[in-house]
Image (cartoon, rainbow, N blue to C red; front, top):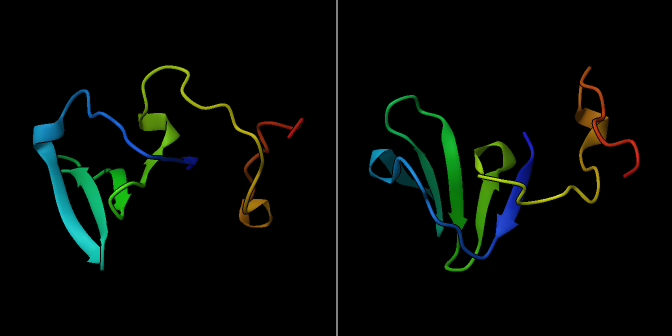
Length: 81
């Protein structure tokens, strides 16, 4: 799963179906009430973490690989990074 960090984001659909719970002090996980999928985390007042697959449009271009030693058998998608 590729994640990105944002200062803010807008939920376009399904906002009423989110379950929000505090996993640790000041960290809130927001998941789908219907299927349980992770949607985004709020870390403090100004930091949100969201999976890139959940975002609309061409939002972020990857700039580096992280945790590639632990990637398993998955192919690295962006060899030029």
